[in-house]
Image (cartoon, rainbow, N blue to C red; front, side, top):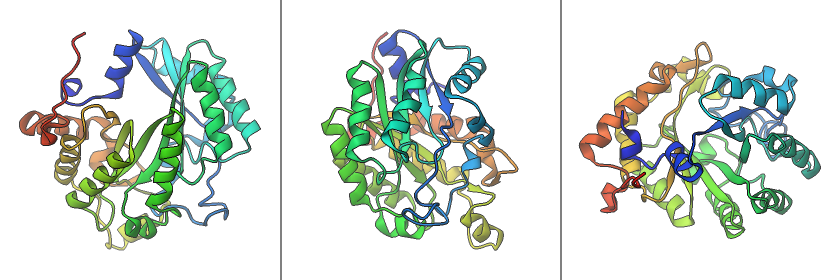
Length: 309
């Protein structure tokens, strides 16, 4: 594969800026979700089962212990970003968040924070806190789970917020100098290539620094799992994901950094599509597609050109 020559990937961007590999270390802060506990809603998003992307056992260990363990697993790098991923990593009192984030950056090998959250869970106090770390010289990314810009779909999957909420949060964060990465799902019910390209267009118009593409995973314990078991919902086929994600990438301005272009999950949590069990399957197919049809930005006549090392 030669994805770094086809897509402006986060790993390559970090390598160019830091002069060495920088790896994300995934942390579990023990956070909850307002769309599960009744603050915003109950039951959560219809696609969600947090076990599909987080090890609940991590909660039992301190941030320092988690960082040490994760760094041991990815010993190819010596510099890391602390990634608070599971549930809603800003859904707590600011003093709790400060303590959690501070434990992470107190490790000498940590060069920044990536904080995954919902667009409706970023109050001004959280923006101020993240800006403190940015102003201290840390790399700070606010990762917002948008999934789609279509309000009809957001209601259908029970997100509990609309696209306007995402726009407000993104504009406030970026006006303060925070980098924003939007998470988008390909394969949501009722959406195809056209809807995904419309989402991309609206996200780019709002302003964005990074993107994550994620094929819809139907996972055990989710509301969607019941529809899948009843035969009312299918997982996205690999060919369909390759076409849609490939075209989204081709229509993405070259300066937008892709943090991820596919994702995997493990059985038995993963029910469908089973090609998502292997993290490389989607990326290999996208590599082939982009080689044949054009690199990131090529559909805009602004192709991604990798900087000369």
